Image (cartoon, rainbow, N blue to C red; front, side):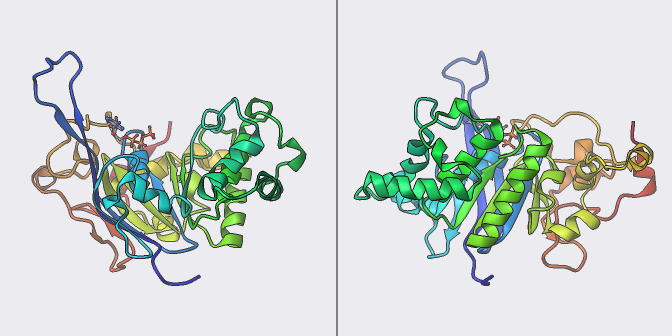
Length: 341
Ligand SMILES: Nc1ncnc2c1ncn2[C@@H]1O[C@H](COP(=O)(O)OP(=O)(O)OP(=O)(O)O)[C@@H](O)[C@H]1O
């Protein structure tokens, strides 16, 4: 693996202007900061796992990078271009390099198109001179590569299972030989056994092709094996980011500890007797986030300092690569833990 950077995100922000339901048309819209100052770096062949509860801004961050929503800050590609400053037309040049796989495999495929045409579509868009025959050959090779039978090329999406539809989505993304694939909850809609197959396929392809992945998921167990680094988001902010091994063995932020507590342990005896760090209450409204640390209203460690001052993202354990945004980082204390129910 090379050491150069493929994508460097710096202080990415996405704000939606929201009109409250029932409000008068002349009332001022309210800003919703869906992504609020996110930075990260991705090298070729790496996987960044992005985790957090529903509504924390994972998909918006992904959509910002491919210019599906306007954003400020920088997302600098390997050639020095800030993708966030490009017009949608100029962004087309990079759409070969950055592909996306979506959550609901069946819904993301056009039901009226044969799978061969679905997979060939991005190839023909970017290579208008390519003959249909050559495109079909490439599609057949790619179908075999992702574990589909090339003789199913004329079938329609509804004739495939969920896992197979996700393989079609992966083939469609890979056919243009991207350098980065953004996977937005690609396995959330699949059965657990199929989830593992799809993740293993992505890991194999990644090794073979040197792909970088951004892999979005709700829960930490899904991204554990595939991620080089994991970033935990809450209300659009980064709470903790660390190399995978550090994050799972030595989490520093109480929110990460709570997310890890929710990961089931396969041994039922250990699972029954485990102690968890439970967080209270619901996610605050993103239209009215808490002052200071946005996690403080659900945090067992919160003090008045947390209401006054937003903690910066800073090295946690003397390790520059492990960063945490908390005034009181550290392992969960005995008094914060309770019996799992
Ligand atoms: N187009 C939009 N207009 C207004 N608000 C939006 C829009 N898209 C997302 N949001 C809001 O931005 C916040 C972040 O949403 P986002 O979908 O990025 O979260 P997420 O972490 O991907 O959630 P999920 O796991 O449910 O997909 C949410 O409060 C959401 O309601």
